[in-house]
Picture 1 (cartoon, one colour):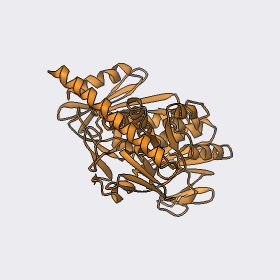
Picture 2: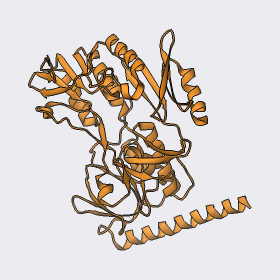
Picture 3: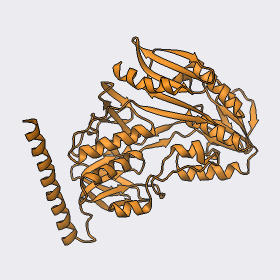
Picture 4: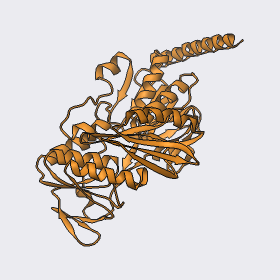
Length: 410
């Protein structure tokens, strides 16, 4: 019986694909140049949008697939920007070559801003007035940097896009001193890269130690030592009150020289299009189920903007990292293509400070943590209700691999 149902489902998908292909061909024939043929659209060229488009294309070779992005560059991976590019280590960044998009008939439309989404009419309208009808839409609009609200804030550089990284790398060539504001992942990585380039660098954060809220005090103390070993000075429990022409002023009135200032003060999911379209949002993210379905018909969300239900966790999880975004995009693409898929992966990411690579897996929130030192690294176990809910490792790959089994069992 089950095999009959699977056969019937495959047959339905095949016939559905034929019908959609036929409709698309009809529109292209009778309305050339006047209206874009409807199909699959991803808003955003990050890991979520590209993964969703690539996955959908692999299942439906004849249906129009488009990626609309404001970024003028080819889709690229962002982690290498602060882990390698800024340090002068070239790493593969492009997700696909320009030829790949042509060969796979994926229409990559760059440097275009979306004005609004019409969920009733199932179309995306750009700032220039172009209308793109869709049968399936994935909102993967990513996140935007949180701007500093202090005098001189416009002098600080950010590190969110490839163009940001190029500007920062060029500025570092002419700088003797730098201050990085923000003790998160990007702040730590950027500070280590600047120090490696010979720039006297200080990392400033409001917390006692970097990444304290995420990883805890003991782990943060180890990170301060790693930063120091790579030439980065850390100033904790401090906020920047003003950015001058050649110095930053702290809240206590003291100042420090800074030819270059980097604002690594976090990001905010860009849900403006979703909110204007009436999609259900919560805590600044688009609410989706385990299949990445949003609250409107044939609309999905993935990546930074999504608050998705994780089957393994049994609840909705905030995802803010590259691998998770790509996985959510895969699920959205499969679901849109008519296949059964759910988000069940345990979230994880890494942080590279010089030659030290911190690896994390887990659900984010925890009640207690326990740090175990090793001869050349450490492991931090995070627990809640007596269960392991996360692990942070440095040179402890066995613990990192074991964590997945423990996290799935918790």
